[in-house]
Amino acid sequence: MKPLNTIFSALAVAVALSGAVYAADPGAQIPHHGGAHMHGQPSAATLGLTGDLATQWDAINTQEKALHKQQFSDGASVLNDAISQLSSPNDDLVALAKQKDAREDIRRDQERSLRDQRLALYKTMNATQQTAVRTLMLQKLTTMQDHVAQMEERAAAHAAAKTQ
Image (cartoon, rainbow, N blue to C red; front, side, top):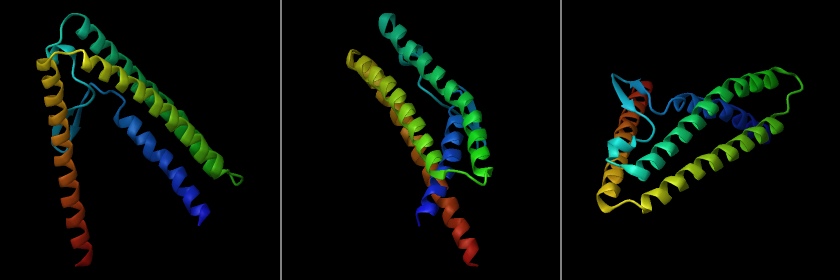
């Protein structure tokens, strides 16, 4: 069973890369099933932030965007390396999985650092500004919830079609 788990770990590389591709430009309008959705954090102006708060908020957004672009540009070489390793008769799936885990740990640490910066900044906002942030977060979560429901409906319809 271990070789099967290792293969799934290797396949997870492709899934992780697809996430990097999806997040490549967090401020971009990405078409999605007939509509376009904003990705990434809202600008300081959208939240009504001014002065130092606006500067700090937008600086964090710039760092986040740069991180996602770097992950995207790294993704192609990571994918090519994984394909090359998996094509070799002497492939080492354990090493491939460990490399993937190490990259994911670094990515998580970088994203956690940005989140922590944003949370520290949130604590310095007044009640109106905090409400604006929470309202936009709630809108994003509601949209995500709608997408999950749509995927579940499609999965159920697909499963029902397979049984017929």
